[in-house]
Amino acid sequence: MDGIEDPVQLWFTNHVDTVYLALDTLQPALLAAAGALRETLLADRRLLSAGSGTGVVLAQHFAATLLNRLRMERPALPVLLLGNDAATLGAIAEGYGHAEVLARQIKAFCQPGDTVLLVAGCASSALQAAARAAHARGARLIVIGSELADAGPLPGPQDIELRVPSEEPTRASECQLLLLNCLAELVERELFGAD
Image 1 (tube, one colour):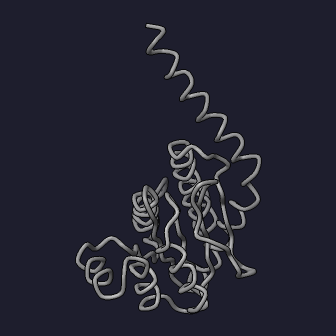
Image 2: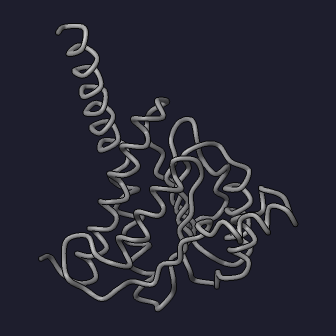
């Protein structure tokens, strides 16, 4: 049994270590990101969410959580998930290249004062183009990345980066999900009160 138990113990230990390190380093940025989302929503603006690699699924989860709920009954929040429609992705990739699949959607839907949340599951030219498009549209940018994946430099003074302190993709994805759930719960609490 030791041959099976040892890796399991290691995986759990690595997960916990990553989470504690993220808590120590990312709490101020997490609170700032929640405040930015609150400001966006209170100003009757929208949140646009997208990702790369495993970040696609995490961005989908986050958008679904805000549209539906995490812990309390509340009104749906205005979040638009980008990059989820195969026909749109295929058409944009064919016409403009894969790097433009998110940027083109941001150019179409994003308005000044909106917030674009990008989840970097892998390094991606599409996320870098999306970040540039968000800035060009006057949007605030929140990027949830890791030591191996980000959306490139964040030139905007109002941009916020939550970079998971891990080079292990699995640990980074687990921690990114935790950060997104924390963001969703903080937004619920700040907009609708604690349940």
